[in-house]
Each structure stands twice: as structure tokens, then as C-alpha cells.
Image 1 (tube, one colour):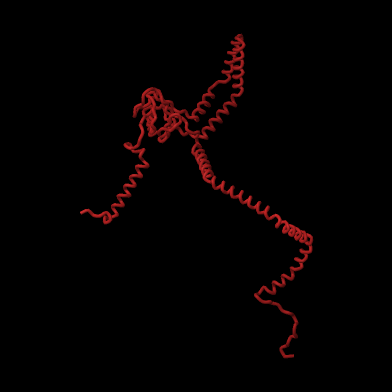
Image 2: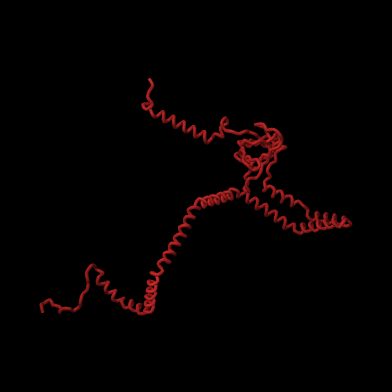
Length: 323
């Protein structure tokens, strides 16, 4: 016999319902990560170095996000970057890839450069000869400073001067170019110390920025949060300004409408102030003279709701013997 639904035990039914809801929510939030449910095609690309690329970075074509990096693995003397393309885009069999800078703080992304005919097969690997690794700006400054220190500027100046001398009988255009080149070399040689200090300072600044990467990123994120909050409060600030303007207009209208009634009152108030100002000294003397009286009056009433005082020698004192 089938048990009616209302007579069944609600506990297992509720548990099954909660389990089903939890499973649906899990699938909704993680459908892209489930191999047999998540859409997208998987590819890989070989790079001579990772260049700061990490798992979760964007995959873009012409600046538009089409997927994300899934893994970065070391394969001998190079790395293999696995990525997934989730958008319906077409790129040929000669497609290239490069690691590019996303932000000044060092974030990177994988850029695909479609090329060739046909369609690149799923799970294909883009070889090393069609990939370009990113070059770190900190390393660039370091290499520039190191290379410049190895240049013998005096010898370079002599060489360029000799070259200019040898070409002194050349046509005017060539001679002018070589003279300018000679002056340039002499200028570089005379500013050698300044250039070295400049490059060393640039190297130091780039190193400091790299070390404070997290702090600078945090400052930018906090500034972004501040702008978001100000934008969210924009309507409230606009309403405040609007209401303040309306209140000012109402006050202005009130004063304008009651100017006839207010003028006599203000005139009388001006006269009263003039009288008070004229008798300012008399008022001061009166207040000063009332000081002793106020003090004695406070003593009389200071013990309660009655007058507390006495009059000396009001009656004749009576002696102990009755005389």
C-alpha cells in the first residue's frame, strides 16, 4: 500500500531536498571547473621562461579575454603553459603566443596571435618558435646599468673622433653628421659620472618599486574602493546639496515676504540697542552696586524656604537673677 505524501516522515524528505539544493548550487558555482561540464577547449604553449605568468591569469586575443591560464609546468629547459579558451573564437594552425604586461605592478596575461589557415586542434601545443616571453622591466634596468658600466667612454670618444678625422674630406652632409657624432661622444664622455649615477638611481628605484609591489597594489586597491564608495554615495550627496539649496531659497522667500513686518521690529530693536549702549556705564554701576544686596539676600534665603535673619538688641537682655 502506498503511503500518502502528507503522512510520510518529513525528515528524510527535507534532507534529500537540502542535498539536492546544495548539489545544484555547487554545480552552478563550479560548472567551469568540472571537466565533463565546463565548456572550453584546452591548449598549451611552450615558452623559454614563464615571465611572471601564473595560474588564473587571463588569456586574451586583441585585448579581449577569451579564457584563462590553467597551469604553468616546467618541462626541461622551458615551461609549458596550459590554458583553456572558453569563448567561440577561431585561430589558425600558425597561431603564436606571448606573455604581456597587464598592469604596471607586474600582472601578466597570455596573448594569443591568430595566424595561418584552418583551426588549431584541441590539446595542441604552440611551439617555442612561435612564442615570445615577457621581459621584466627591473631586469632591463639592471642589464642597462651593468652594460653601461662596461663601456670605456674615453676610448669610445677617441674612436669616434678618429672616425670624424678620417672622413674630413667627405661630402658636407657626411662630414656634418660625423662632426655631430663626435660632439655627441664627447658629451657622453664628459657626462659619464652623471649617466652612471642616473642609471644606478633608476636601478635602485625599479628595485624599490619591485620590493614594494604589494604595498603599491594595496594603495591602488584602497583608492579604488574609496572611489567606489564615493560613487555609491553620489546620490546622497546630490540630495543633500539639492535640499540645502531648496532650504536657502525658502529662507530667502520668507525674508522677502515678511520684509514689511520685520522692518519695524528691527528698527525698534536697533533703538533699544542704542539706549543700552548709551547707558552702558550706568548699567555697569547698577550691577556692581547690587552685588552686596544680592549676597545678603542669598544668605537670608540660603537655608531653606524661609527668611533666616536676626535683629541685634531688639529687647533688653534678662539677667539670671530676674533683675
